[in-house]
Length: 383
Image 1 (tube, one colour):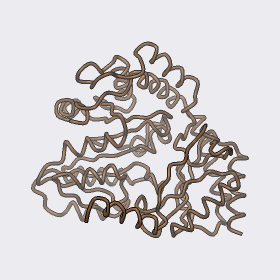
Image 2 (cartoon, one colour; image 1 turned 90 degrees about the vertical axis):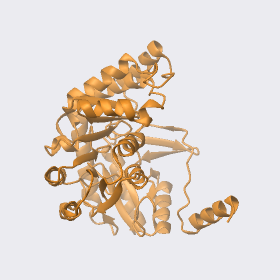
Image 3 (cartoon, one colour; image 1 turned 135 degrees about the vertical axis):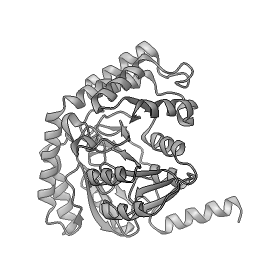
Image 4 (cartoon, helix red, strand yellow; image 1 turned 60 degrees about the horizontal axis):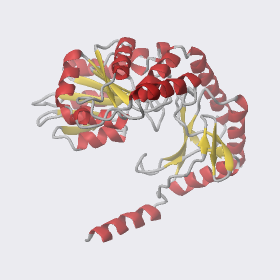
């Protein structure tokens, strides 16, 4: 089969399954509203959980950083790209989260890939929650280590995997709050089992950092767990982008010496690091925002309890409404859009077949009338 035939067949299959992906052109958006195609929608698909992406202090931090250091880093951090703004952000993150060191990455995807790419060797094993993010599973599947999945949020399933013999090291992988189901991992149980097996635990807390725990320190802090490797990302509650790996000093030195993702990538702009320091300050002082977010979550869950679709059991900002088939999810998304609510439909392969859903995300920026508008549109669609 030629390249053209292979590509054509894959595209035809994607269209036939109602799984065709499109990138909508967005004219303008805030955390609360989105403008596209000449219309304004109430926005329920943003991961900007605290509404910081347009916070004046965050924007000012980026502007001041750009004035001082320019728009880009200009090189890898191992050449001339490591600015004092990067060093200050890494130190602040490490102190805040209780680790020796923090290492910055350009994205959460890159951070997860870097960790597994560097650590996994032949005879090692990676035991991953089967609903872990694609960045984790993709890296593990291409690692020389053996990948085995354990049942979602099931410590007993992990225990069974750990009981099998292994000639090398063991890395257990999970998320703090899962991106598509919105539920939380039982981190204390997973950490204890991993410790008993003399393995390391990697937690991707992209959707927990900034939102849960004291000062928004995340899922691990909330559950009293300190994994050997913690990845936090800045494209959600921090309102910016990028990521960091938290670890001990020796592991950080190992990554600085051998991680190709760090050595051969241009560093994030120093201006971005300055904006992230401003965002970190807002996150640390954000108890009122987190309280408002929880109020919005509870308002939505109360109003959605009588809907005919399954609302997954989670008190996180991610409120998945399980629809089932792809076409039905797309139709419901379109119905809500006609009512002025932007809610993206999530379909396989992002989620398992038969579990297409509306991934409703709530934020501290939403007002009560926004929640009520969405609930009214959902009840109208159900009728």
